[in-house]
Length: 127
Image (cartoon, rainbow, N blue to C red):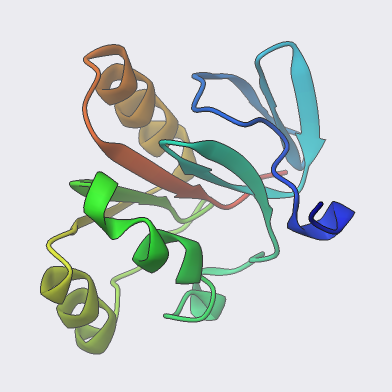
């Protein structure tokens, strides 16, 4: 059995129902902090600023890349451009990267999972 920190919050994908005040609501649950939403599970994500996003913070995405076509990164309230090395690494595993503020990222993610697309989202919590 995995350690509690290694266990997902939810063992499947789910739409994000609400966000703000430093957290998210989904599947009748709530979470304070950032989230990593993969097709097979939703995880706590320790990132608090876009500058912390790198291959190590996205290791679960790389491990699940065969089941993901698009990764949406919600960058909080600011705009962030992913470093070329990160874009190249995702392209190498055939994952398209799209970055935007967290609000639009949630909307896009919810639409894409509603269409049953192979999407993941890395969402930085906003105040």
